[in-house]
Image (cartoon, rainbow, N blue to C red; front, side):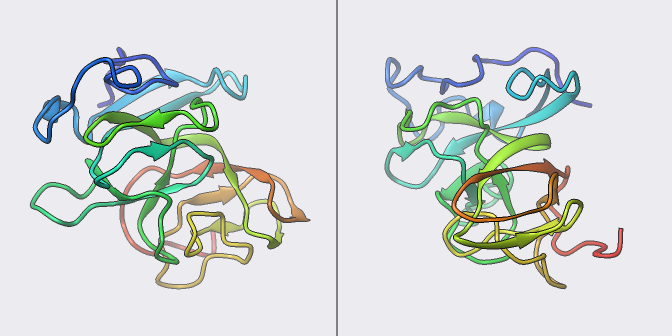
Length: 187
């Protein structure tokens, strides 16, 4: 069950942009925890789920509407630590950075931040883009929405909201909960 009270506000990191020095084990009790909040970004009136994750990339993350790839360096990293931002493996298991972060916001190494686990999120599409409303979405090798439908064996992040052919713009994705590879491409 998702918790209802966020440990820090959306659009900020745990250290609030560097006011607290974060170490590898700081706030580890929050890694991978799921929180339910109102959709204040899109005004849909729906609930969304946020996953609290640690920046385990080794350097600061500059916020952008892209997908994050989970770390697999150590036991229990997967689902709780981001090892690559933006994601750099096409079809990888990813979640989008919460679109409540302002573009350019800096998330220091070892800091905690939110990705969208389930619900609406804007994500940048690659330059060549042709998806129909409801098509399954996967990531490309640059952390962007792949401009073609997700293929068998790729992680389906969710479904595209509106048909489109214009690339290099933010598109609305209905992010699906879970971290399982693949999925039913027929639904």
